Image (cartoon, rainbow, N blue to C red; front, top):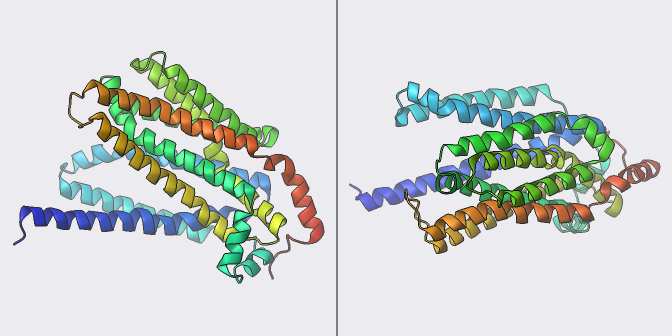
Length: 354
């Protein structure tokens, strides 16, 4: 029989394999084609915006439903390991049904001849074209910063509620306060995109978050103030979440116009690199800083650990969104886009595949 240490090692290996199989392999295999599908369904800019807005508003709604329903369902099923397994199976079956519905109910109508030709080129040529696309590099950096924010906020929010606000139940209030305004703003974003442009909305949202986080310094331990700041963060996040995939579609067209190579699939694949890399960096940074502060996760933390939690929660968002704002100042594609598309049309670059 295995010793306790041996059993623990086997469990750790099992968890490592299954977790990464789920989140790294299967999720990526689903999310990449799902993200790339919208520009293959339509090349109308406003239709693309509506598809993405619907996607990015339904996603947090699903998250809220699952977050609110899971524990009550599990408790009614007995609250034990078997209950967790049963609920996981139910969610898996629902997910499979919805994914099949999406597969059977959508159709790729836009097939660019240039995209098919690009897939036949050597990988080095396609990567070369990708690296010459300045707007791809800018958006990848913004994705990296967003992933850093999400990792830091996701890691520290619970501890902030417990050790700074004084009750870990405030975490739910912070989460709801941030998510609900985000959903509401995304749902009404389409006319504002048309009027102000994607870049300007993302820039304005970034500035709102930076100002809100700095305002939190005035009363960091006040729950009402912290919840109000979380609501402003949700409002500020909405433009980036609502525009990110349509901006990626714009970047594909820009790269095609700039280099003559339409690396459509590669752009959507490589864009996830910033997300994963940023999340990894932030996770390692947070873990290292928390360890150095003396954080233990016990009911009563030492002052240095509480101070670290507070600083990471406040300043992590300030730094990440300030960098996104700086990146948006350099993002000029909205102004150039109509001229680029007209030039591509004149040159026959938007020819559909047979």
